[in-house]
Image 1 (cartoon, rainbow, N blue to C red):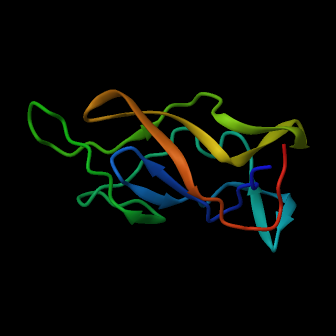
Image 2 (tube, rainbow, N blue to C red):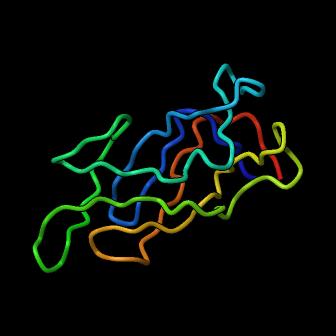
Length: 127
């Protein structure tokens, strides 16, 4: 079973940008004191770049607009991602799992992706 994501989990874009997801998490369910991340925490997330860092940025996204070479970091699309719980919910929302992934748009155009590179905890698994 995949691990549940908590605040501090690391999301990565296909251009190598990595950031810590800072929430909002649910205080109704925590793992080792960290709030679990619900579906939607990843929606509309912008990866930073060297010129425009974002909170939680570990490594900048390197996407650029091909015609101009101007930096334009990835932005996650607001769709239900792959990798959410089917049995565990907080209220009526599913919880994000370490297998979560989805699409982004960036300077290179559509078709870029994001995935989880670190769930932020190693204790709770779910389906």
